[in-house]
Every structure is written in structure tokens, then in C-alpha cells.
Image (tube, rainbow, N blue to C red):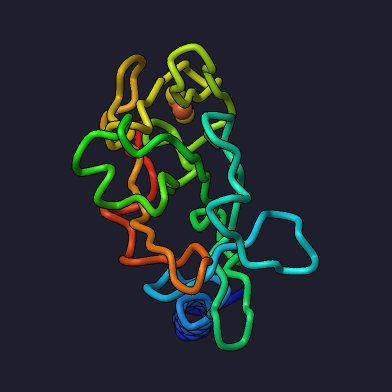
Length: 183
Ligand code: FES
């Protein structure tokens, strides 16, 4: 039978293990959120080719991407909260604030739905809106990914972009916390 002292020791050990794991995760360059200056690469691209605006089809469904450290080419794919979706529009079709975060018409948002955290997995070509098939939340990526339908409580956080040497580069961190509201 485990006595109280052993139980405390075990609990402390577990706590330390968890703390060190969390510390490792937070320090892991693959798991930290995209940073200013990061390049973008298409998900699944083993060549890790840095994306340019021309790589994102105009007015078409989302391209899935990760941020990549420009120095050592670490792809920040260690957390599903780092999944990005990219879209390209005629800049004239973007709301002013969204245009200011775009690069040659390319906008970036988290892939994580703000309702219950499913991946945003649908593209409504007619309205050029994003949709989450879990509970049909719909977002307008031309206007800050504001919620236009469904139960999502807030817009998708955006990742501001710029173009440097012809490549898409992260200009600023996410505009809001990535994740979802506990239901
Ligand atoms: S998780 Fe996306 S609408 Fe519910």
C-alpha cells in the first residue's frame, strides 16, 4: 500500500514531469506560433519551398500551409494550432483592415474553427466564404474572417503577411488567440 509520503512524492514527480514537458513544448521551435519574418510552406511539401503570392490560386479554395523559420528551415508543424490557410483575392475586394494585413491579395488565417476547434474544411465558391463542416459556421475571409453564419463566437484569427524578395513572409503574430471557446 502506498503511504502518504510516497503519494506526495509521486505527485510531485508527475508535476515536474508535466512542467518539463510543457516547458519543452513551449521552447520547441516547431511548436511556437508563427513569428514575424517566418516564411510559409505548403503542407506536405517535403522540399519546403517558400511560397510566393503566385503560388496561391486567385479566388480559389484555401491552400494549407505552415510557417517556417527562415534561418534553419524548421517547419512549425509541431502544434495543430499552427495550421494556416491561405487565400488570394483581388485586393480591391478586401475590406480595408483585411487589405492592410494582406500581401499582393494573399490573406492568412488559422485553420482552427473558433467554435469547437475543428479544422476549417470547406470553401463556398459562390460567396467566396470559408465554412466549417462540423456545425456549419461560415466566415468571410475578405472581411477579417468575420462570422456570417453558424455558432462560432468570433472571427478566425488572422496572420498578417508581407512580401519580401518575392516571398510571402509573416508580418506580425496572429491578431488574436488561436483556439476555441470551451462549449
Ligand atoms: S467546430 Fe466549427 S462550427 Fe463547430
